Image (cartoon, one colour):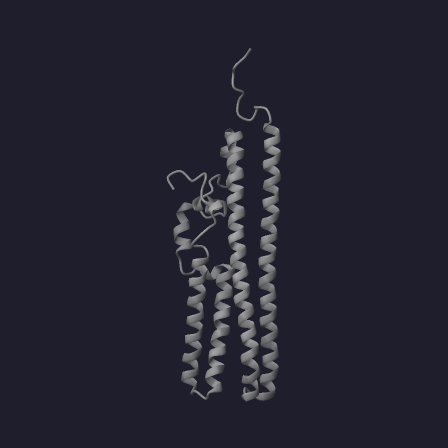
Length: 229
């Protein structure tokens, strides 16, 4: 009776394992697609609300010439837009965290593939490791550019939450200017009020965004960390 251990990928049940892993992989791919779809839908809804509010206020401004009636209408309308923007940012950040989870899941599945067929490793572009470094590689951010891109102040506005944060901060600035106009503050004071509201909301959004990724669930703790990570 032979006691030889069958080569990797030929032991009994390997076909069933591969089928299970592939099914889960396709499930995560479909879930990532739904995540992207919801993110874009949320952004489109917010931009539609913003566009409708701006058009409505433009019509009111033509009639009232930025008088008391315009201010009375504009502040509540823009406050609703501000709320919609903050809610959209919150949801998009949650979806980004979900997407990170799906990427980690697919990296773990890729690690399982390579445990069964290690000879296939040269053919994989995405990572098999489930830490941050592995996730960034799967997302197309290599070690050379990761620190420069993620640490740059220009990277945040390129993301969906960052872009929305700038727009929401601009809406807050407009509300600040209108509030100053309502209490008859001179134009320089109106500009300062708008700038202060913009900066304050932008900083709060940035701090909120950084904290949203400060902690992850225990299930996302690396099980297959990158070498020398």
